[in-house]
Length: 257
Image (cartoon, rainbow, N blue to C red; front, side):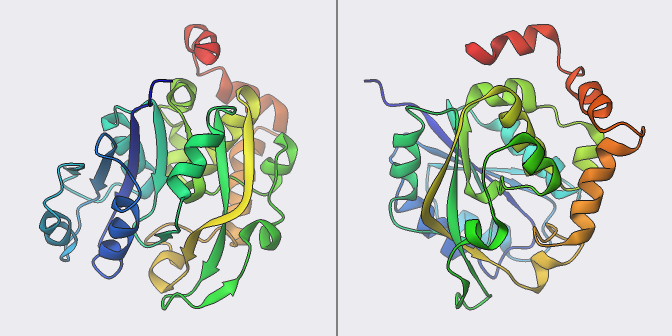
């Protein structure tokens, strides 16, 4: 069986405090053919210097000249990725042992996988042993419209998902809800599997709980924002259909590719 080419896409912004540990946890698991695409959102700290110090040919760094929001930053990184399989990564988490190989194995059977993770604080002290249990994660379109289970940093998927999920709808990009959107597309068109083994330390700290960075997945305001994207016209399912219609018939036909 041919080994698929894999891209790990990481969006970064002023991540000097944690990015070295995260990159080490990723690079120690991947093979030489896997690329780590890093899209920087105009960092003004030492993030870029730390990345360049690795001098690892697997790392490919792309820089935005100014901050454009985390969803736009992820989308830019996805455009640069060349892999047949895509992993999403935040700058401040830690991949646990075998995350890469376990996800690759399950992607032989499914289009999308989502791993469980342990929620930790800035010092990696465990706050919750299972994000799935804490957030009641699982499959289901309506369930995930109400509360998103598709945590981006825990996701990996086949490239064909991007043929429908990108470009991100403008409202999704503005709301920092790119993982919600990708998860919704997966529920509509692809097979998914939730891996119950925690394979990530999901770090929660002041910087990523503020509106300046990625919004907290536990935030009621984010949930309200996600729902409002689809209810502004007064009809939830009409609004969903309208967004999906932005995907061309040609792209929809590529789901089975």
